[in-house]
Amino acid sequence: MTTIYLIRHGQASFGAESYDKLSEKGELQAQRLGQYFKNILKESPYVVAGSMHRHQQTAQLALAECFPHSQVVTDSQWNEFNHQQVFAQYEPRFNEPHLLKSDVAQHVNPRAYLAKIFEGAIKRWTGGEYHHEYEESWPIFKARVETALQDLCDELAQTKPRYAVVFTSGGVISVAAGKILELNPNRTFALNWAITNTSMTTLRLVGNEPQLLSLNEHHFIKADDSELLTWI
Image (cartoon, rainbow, N blue to C red; front, side, top):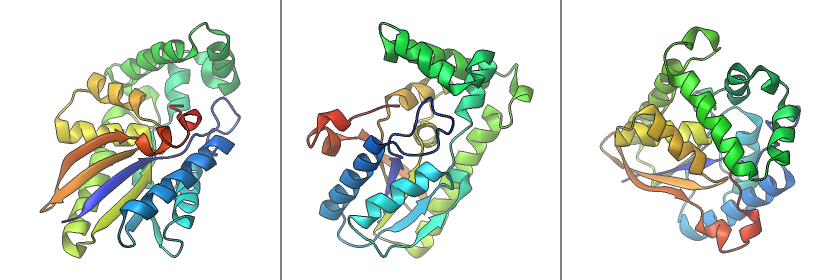
């Protein structure tokens, strides 16, 4: 029976010109993840990563700590939605990432303020009225992720590795979990907001159907160094 680990990338560069690069803290998180994998995985896993730079960086840094000779299959179906466009369509000034970062930093409760913006932006994206305004609408993104998950499950049902690890993003993991749990969009993205960097969401493959075993495991980061625990 195959166990699938869905991994959110390490902390990226929020508010920078290019978000798609790990911060120094994100690099350390990826290394801690790899050290944890070295303890819990008894053999080299089948590895998939989205094509985004933060996915590839997290995979490389983590695997260097445990299975340095593992081959990584790159699959863009596991890429995140364009969160910067989703923010910008909700509030046009956020088309400049540094302005969003500045607004968040100046707020008394930065995380609560960003959560409010995120909730509003996601409701607009998933609501149905504005699908035509996005490069990738919510229905298309959802279908892409669900296809990626089913394609992976079908392949693993044939090859039967003991472990599979997928390096991806919080929105993707939320949709995958939401599919299994039959959640609506609001509840799906409530999960998204809670998923920590380099956390593990664990699935068990039964036939070619995934079952959710755990969501957002991050104890290996929190116990080792709570200062490394991040959500954005």
